[in-house]
Length: 354
Figure (cartoon, rainbow, N blue to C red):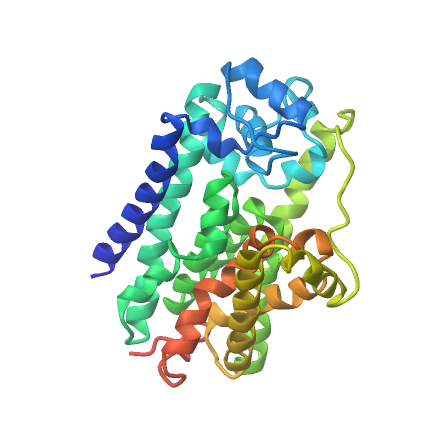
């Protein structure tokens, strides 16, 4: 049954992509999120692809991942990484462009499509994994659709972001832990961290759960992802030592809750943004209340992202697009926590409920 649900998740991804591609004349560059005001990255894409679609203002992450995918191993940083706004920071997220770029073998015209295909495939695989987890909890496998219907992941799809791959690897780690495969889980969590460095928080949440439930710390679950990050960053320092950036960092963090309260005045300018952001806050509040009492790895992996969200600046909180991507692990975990009885979801490290 999990395969059926996974197929439905894959189909949902395809339908969403086609819904956007067909009106655009099947121009896959719409997913690169190139900005009209991002002259450096948009100029790079035009040189590689010719005519491309652009968005208003600065665009978003897809434009950087496209550059990285053309040289994922940084063999020619002067011709590629030099077009990133912050080369070392961006190049931390290496796994998604490495896969989408065919380990450096794909030409730019193929990469435009392989980035999109990678994310759609990840949605399908993630749906299958989530369905398997639900079945282990004796719940409906259709809970797996909380992956392709996750608003944060759908926004990642829209900008060719790495968040889908990163979270699906985290789900794979949850499943591996349930199967008593801690080393497999550690490697998957390392892959998640190399897709999006903040996913170390997911590993941290699981480690805290293990400490509470089992009075032990599964060190490999946090040390392997951290080691992967440190090793890759060491490589980055060598390869990008003399590569300047093309932009300044945004102030993403601030004092707790300040950014959220500052953003309220922006929400009130658009009724749909206001409704969506309030719905997000209500869901998060309901999730936290039950997840803290729950003992499932999928919930405790998501909890640190709620804490992280309280520290985010107004620049993240003012747009549902951005805050929902930060809270993406919550949107998939919430249906599991809210709909599965607690006694069925006590899936802890290495335990087989059978």
